[in-house]
Amino acid sequence: MDSPAVEIIDLVKRYGATTAIDGLTLSAARGAVTAILGPNGAGKTSTIEICEGFRRADAGTVRVLGADPRAHALRPRVGVMLQAGGVPPAMRCGEWLRLVSRFYASPLDPQALLVRLGLAEHARTPYRRLSGGQQQRLSLAAAVVGRPELVFLDEPTAGLDPQARHGCWDLVGDLRAAGVSVVLTTHHMDEAERLSDHVVIIDRGQVVAEGSPAQLTGAERQLRFRARPGLALEELLNALPDGSAAKESPAGHYILEGQVGPELLATVTAWCAAEGVTADDLRIERRTLEDVFLELTGRELR
Ligand SMILES: Nc1ncnc2c1ncn2[C@@H]1O[C@H](COP(=O)(O)OP(=O)(O)OP(=O)(O)O)[C@@H](O)[C@H]1O
Image: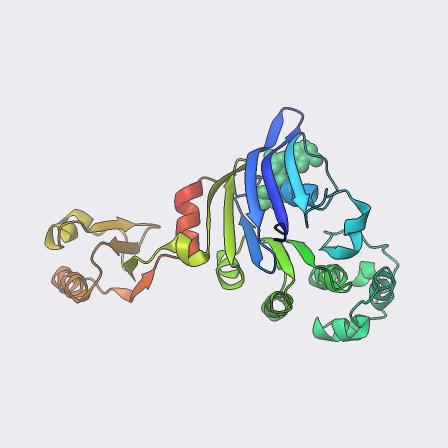
C-alpha cells in the first residue's frame, strides 16, 4: 500500500526558548485535501516548512511521499507555494513561470495557467509591480506548474479578492480531481469546510482535533437568532424542554442547543413574542467549523 502523502510522528521544533511544535502527530492521505488549522502562532507554518524541507525538526519523524523531506528526489514531485520573497523583483511574471516550468519533465502550459489565474494581462509586468494578490496567485501558479503529486499551500487565499479566492478554490478542486494530494493552511474556516476531506486543528504545537468537516461539526443542529443584547436566557430556558442549552455569543447573537425541532422553534418564537423581541435571522443549522474551532482553541487573541 502507498505511504500517506505526509506522515508526521511526534514532531518537535524549538526556536530558542519557544517550543513551536510540541509532539505533533498527523497524517495526510494521498489524493485528498488536508487542511491544517490553528490560531496565530500555533505552529502551522513551521510544520509545513519542515515538510517542505526548508527547516529541520528537533525531534520526531516526517515522511513526505514516503521519503525524507530533504531528499532531492522529492523536488520534482512536490509543489511549494512560497510566500513573498521567492521571486527576483525585476523578473517578469510570465518569464518567471516559464522558468519554473523548465525544471519539470512534463509541466502544465505556463500561458494557460496565467490565463486560468487571471494573470495573462500581467505577463510582462515585473514581479515587484504586481499587487499583493497577483504575487500570491503567481506563487500558486509556480507551485502547480510542474504537475506535482503533492502540493503544500500555506494560506493560499490570504489577501485575495473574492474572484481570486474562488479561482484558487476551483484550482484546488481540479488538483484533487486529478488525484493530487494537497496540504494547506488557512484561517478561513469556510474555506477549510468547503475544500478539505480532512481537517487537523492544532494549537500550541499539538493536534487538538481532527476528522472530516462533517465529523468535526457533528450532526447536532442549533437554533440561532439575533436580537437585542442581554435577553433573560434563564427565563427562556425554563420554558424549553429539559436538556436544552442557550448562550449569547457574541452579544446579541443567540444559540440554542438540544432537541432542535418544531417544539423548540415554537417555544422560542412564542417567548420572543411575549417579550416583545424580534428575532432576526432565525435559523436552524449545524454547528460550523468556526464554532468548533473557537470552542477548541478559545477566544483570546494570540
Ligand atoms: N524563525 C523563527 N524564530 C523564532 N521563533 C519563531 C520563528 N518562526 C516561528 N517562530 C515562533 O514559533 C511559533 C509558531 O510559529 P508559526 O509561524 O509556525 O505559527 P503559525 O501557526 O503558522 O502562525 P500564523 O497563523 O500566525 O501564521 C510562534 O510562537 C512564532 O513566534
